[in-house]
Length: 276
Ligand code: ATR
Image 1 (cartoon, protein in one colour):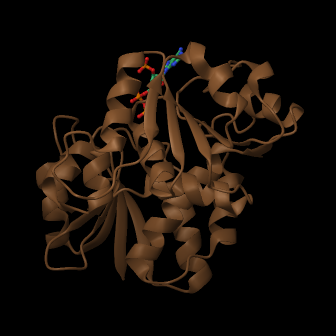
Image 2 (tube, rainbow, N blue to C red; image 1 turned 30 degrees about the horizontal axis):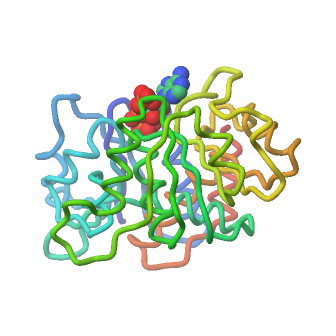
Image 3 (cartoon, helix red, strand yellow; image 1 turned 90 degrees about the vertical axis):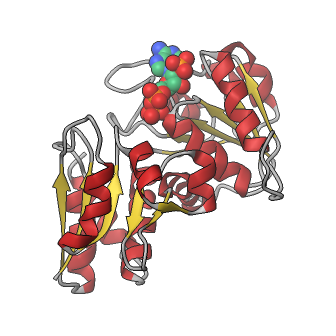
């Protein structure tokens, strides 16, 4: 039996176990997905030692994504984002990946949103970083707007690769305050909310009249699924993508990396939505 899992604190309400186990069942794989909750002080040793216990793959969530970065060999994208959410123990050394980035881009693409032109990312925390790098890697111009503008500027500089010694081409990115949102959205193609605004509350970080029919709008918030932002976006005629899609596709990407199989996306999606 293959053992996969999630390490974080807290992990009690995680939707990853039912989502991944629905995938194993659909493919007839002999595998389990379990949760680990070490003390918040640090989990680097636990992540490094997991391979000795026979764990084949780990997802990593708050507050251990930076611990994981230091404990494993991160791939270039995870290194640039500065966080690892997926560890693969199949090689000689554990490798670290960030599937939050591809979770956002695959969620948008699954809704026929074209990933070209300009994307506006609202938020510059952990989720905003992954989304901004993911969209920039697709070749999009990325405008990052954040309540604390200095954090948006710093993230934009990281996406551009300012000061980086790598000769990899950096993305086209700029940082902004939330006041710039109407001007930024006027000629944008994609909008992602990567702030916590809208979680458990009827609020949105984006003025409704700045939305338009040409936008593909992803809200990373999935509790609730129907946020104010998404209902405003639907009313404006935009394509809407709820946060469960991003959660689904980050899991799908981890599943595919670990098992080497194409993920049964429908079964995983159903298991996830049953619980939301
Ligand atoms: P996560 O890992 O989920 O991204 P985070 O790192 O705590 O969480 O980041 C939360 C994001 O939501 C930040 O961009 C934060 O803005 P600040 O950098 O200015 O703190 C944003 N955010 C949280 N509450 C907000 C609010 N009431 N209005 C606007 N932005 C908010």
